[in-house]
Structures are given as structure tokens and as C-alpha cells.
Length: 168
Image 1 (cartoon, rainbow, N blue to C red):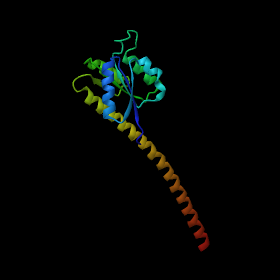
Image 2 (cartoon, helix red, strand yellow):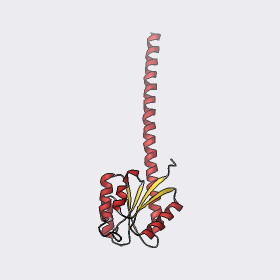
Image 3 (tube, one colour):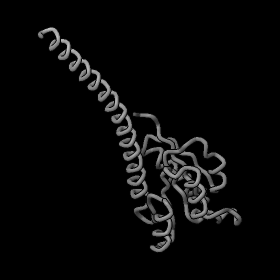
Image 4 (cartoon, one colour):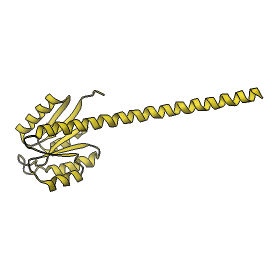
């Protein structure tokens, strides 16, 4: 399944978002769409991204913008299975635990190893998503094979029954 993946990146720091977007495009086979507010991203939600990378602090440009925690809640209300990676420049374990409990799949600190951690997290999301798709396909094939085995079994029972009648 080599369908190009879609990543939504939501960060109100335009330079940071541009840098991360370019890095993701260069490192991964993925389309990256950048949004500078959570509300803007939610307005474009119908494209069904594979993963959303969401900054926690989203109100430096627009003071009335919702923070990442509120946007996370809205994302998961629309699609509880969507993978959301939270970003922050605040080293706050309590906040990280809270967001992970609310449904984020990862919480990445914007530090000197940020980009490596982000790439690893996104790759893990893609790998898990591919494995889930593969499992789904295998379940479909398994169901088809079970039907075939049942038909063969019924056919064999019928043949044995007919042979038994003929030999009597």
C-alpha cells in the first residue's frame, strides 16, 4: 500500500511550521498541509489526514484561537481513531499526561532532538496504520478461505455419503 500519506501540521509560528513541513516532506513520502490555527484545520478536516501534528499553544498570533488541548478534544469528537501528536515548548509532565489521557498518541517537546522524535513518532503512526490495514485485508481473506474450506468440507461429506449409498 504505497498511497501517499497526508499529514496536517498545526502551529501558529509560521517559520517553525514551514521548517517542520519542509523537513517532513524531505524525510517522508507524505503530503503535508500546514495550518496556523486549530479552527482553520478543523475547517479542512474532510480530507481525512493520517496524522495531525498539533501545537499545544496556538494563540500567539490570534489571541482568541483555541489552544491545542481544546482542538484535540474537537478532533477526537469527530474521529476518535485519528492519530494526534502534540507539540509543545513547555516541559510540563502534568500537561503531557493530561493530553495523552485525552487521546493524543504522543507528546513531543520542541527541543534539540525534536525533529528526530517527531520523525520517529510519525513513522510509528504510519507503520501501525499500515499494519492495521494489512490485518483488515488478512481478515477478509481469512473469511473467504473459511467459506471455501466449508464448501470443500460439505462437498466431501456429500461425496462420501453418495459413495456410501452406492457401495451398499
